[in-house]
Length: 428
Image 1 (cartoon, rainbow, N blue to C red):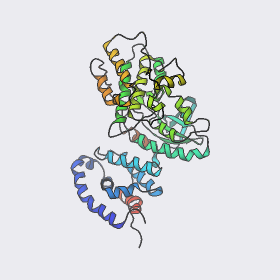
Image 2 (cartoon, one colour):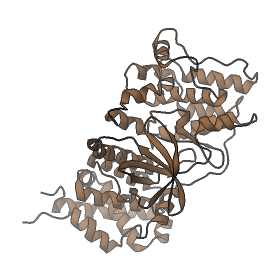
Image 3 (spheres, one colour):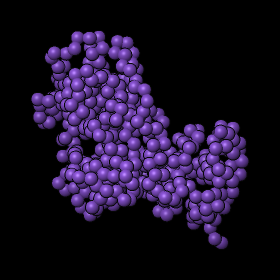
């Protein structure tokens, strides 16, 4: 029997009457600017997700049925949807993607052209510059060498892509899509001409606003850790932070570490080898084998702040093995305060903040929100930059620019392709 029964569908339709009233009250402006078809589809979808029984039945969908629903949810999110409903649609999409191992079809890009030679690489993949429909993009080709890994990787990266695609913040790198390049799975994002933070700092002038960059990263992490998003980055470091055209820092590669921890990307590049490349940013509790959490991101943020302020790696004179023993031992070794150090109240207060991020006990570290408040307050008084390089519609505009078909089918087509099929009553 299909997970939906006739009585379940009937109860959904009955409950939609009261739900419709609240929708009209909270989104009159939204309904006016969208077609009647879209309003009908949105009402049906919100009603389903607003009812516990029908929502759980939707979350139990798999294969073709799940794919149809994922595509519908992403279509709705890519339209100018009322913010009242975005969290409901977004959380449902992410949950169904994780449960089904699928992702919205629109994530898969075509026609990508690789330009020139490889421009960089990290623990998880190699980076190329490319173009889609004449638009410059960054292509991160994941290191997958065994045939058996490809399916698992697609499920894992597709799952994280579903999370990434719904996030929008001036200090987070947008997600544009997935692509297969010479049998390698690629993550596609906007191209950042100034590259990562490490390279940018090497080229920076003496008057660079370093504390402003710290605020950028802290604000991006504050958004990730917020109650409405609740994402652990897991691998925060200078090479995973890019510099935008407006010279703002934006966080990239969030979620990738969790996938690498679940599977070995290749026989020559295990999760252990990947971890050894990030030891300098790992909190003591992570080094001894505990799971990543918000507080471990805060420890890593302190190390990133050290990179920004000094232009050097944390523990730059120590090997990874020496760092492991020093960090987890009782001497509480932490990156040393450089000499000379600017003798200003702002820089002194910033160093105290870094030391709080490196507190041995995870529960004693400040939250990302506390860090942002400290940075913008006296005596540091970091300035929030005005403007942004992208808005919440950036990824959906990119999608429209490279896709010929409409974002959303008509109500009758949705009824036929999704609701009538997915919510069908069992035959007698």
